Length: 123
Image (tube, rainbow, N blue to C red; front, top):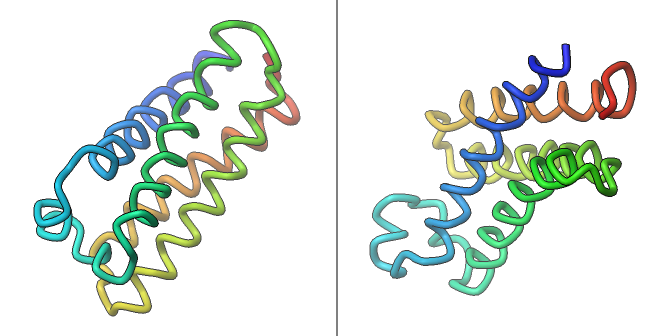
């Protein structure tokens, strides 16, 4: 069962790493072209969101790999659930529902990771 949870954690972390990395390194014009919701936030706020996503990617993977403070993984997954709820709210407020299913899938995956790592399948 632990392999199944890892099979959920790794792609979730990769999505967060790529998405957060894009928010951190792309120029503002290019970011607005790729992520129109970013016009509702300052450049600094978008970079903070990107930093949170990169940190979440690390928090999903590193504690389990290093076998150190493994309780951080389910805590991080709970944070990702909250992040995805925020993303759904932002997209819905803008009446842009196309990305919402992706956010819902990521929310469910993060919820499963949190539930299993807190409960039946800890490290």
